[in-house]
Length: 332
Image: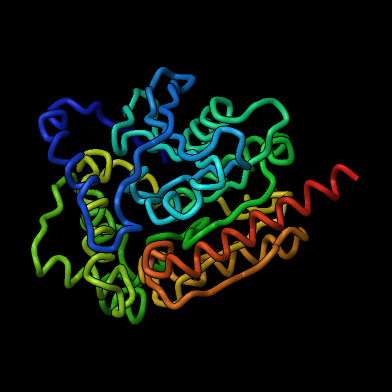
């Protein structure tokens, strides 16, 4: 199923408010937004302009970050702040998210793959390879890209990290709503009503409490919960709904087999949006193809790189080293 993303239109009126949500200041310094070293102009093959930022030294080894549904570049602040001192870190707003345009193209696996390929075209020099990192829909993006462009994987990727993501059966496994899919199968109409309705997300104490216990680990700090919710609330409601409607039917089963470089999969043991069985299924596919570098389960909810930033960053550093060893082996 393909879903058209609507043009921003009236959403432009709320752009300053949405930008303010993404740029809030927190006591936890790693959550605060750094200034990009460069802004990279990227226009997709169908003419949509994407916001792409570069951080860190131009000569550093490259990391490319792909965020998830309803997020934006700023979602990766804990990783950008940790790695931009040594690495060249690129992050982009997915189509329709953050400050990227929606364009006229239908949303779907091919669109995710093509946009990601266009971003890599813009940020990588000929022969240059990067560590690719995808969270949630960003992990689906990398899988879709590998499936659509398998010849590009060895050319452009040194290693891959997939975090709290999935390949298929997204509405059938989510346990965000109590009881449903734990005891009673959730009907499709319920998922559509919950995620596919273009309504603004409210703020407030009650919403933060729900987010803490349904999207995060109960031990998540107030800053972590506020940060995650502010990023999600900054997404245009029209984009959030349109993308959610299509993700309900996304099927990338087996796509991870095309990731023919060292690939690590990270799951959250308390993840109710994309429960651990999704990550395990992807890890099994990678193990069968011989490219699973590591399967790691952290004690977090869905926002694994925020809730357990230190452990996630340590795993990313390890993945980068694994990619370097792979490049040395390939050169030999």
